[in-house]
Image (tube, rainbow, N blue to C red):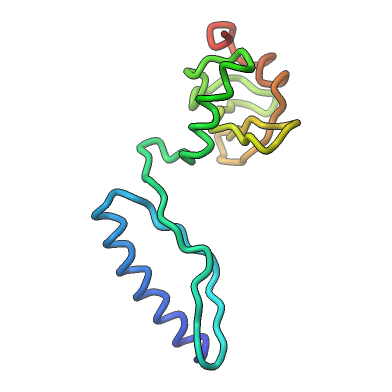
Length: 129
């Protein structure tokens, strides 16, 4: 197999899977394609539940669980506040990141990670528990 044939097959497979994803209201996330002269393999192919907000469902559910433990109300998720680099909003919580668990996005779409104290200092008092 050559790269042109692999690209053609990949586009057809993605189109077919996109129809299935739309039918069941899920999003398709595909990793890399590995190929040799005789075969090809899709890696990291998965379907995730679609959300209205466009936020990662795993990060959102982790935020909903852990935010109250840190003294932050769940309403703080996806709410704009004044940060040190302009307007920012919390988009989730990475439970594996001990030091900087909160995931932030600024108006330009750049992502940041932040510690708990940073969030507590910048959020308005009505969003703190």
